[in-house]
Length: 181
Image (cartoon, rainbow, N blue to C red; front, side, top):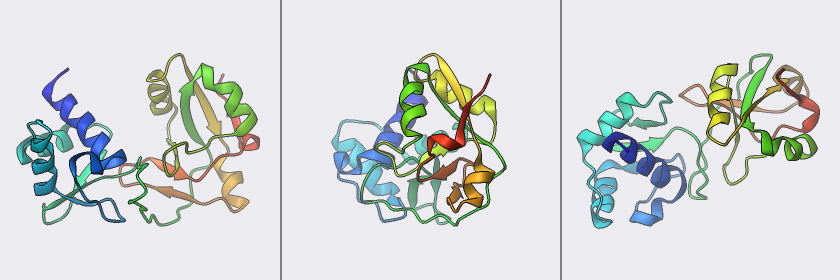
């Protein structure tokens, strides 16, 4: 695994799920000090530098991370499961349909229960089918689900869009889902 991929996975783990693993404090919006992140990684025997962090941010096709305007803080854009983070996103009208990629082994449960955020704060949806298919591939044989976002929104469900384009909502009941193909 390349150095950049390892660093990206480490940043995802720390900034999304377990900042306490390296003694990093995140505020409610997910921001943590770059200096503290580098120092915490070093205490765990990981070589992480500002330059490597900047490279990861620059090459990450999903734009998972961002630096503050002053360059002193970093955060994961979305995907948090840690209780210390409670990002506030503005409600936004979604496109008529959104997509969710999953593995075939989860479809029966999703058909019964709908999409739930699991350990994360939100269900993640994409505006295009191919992105959803790529996400589904990470978990096994991919299945793409279509979300009737227009009908959900009309019925009062709230949607948000993270800075990297990922659509977020608290849950998607089964009545708003159908399978592609």
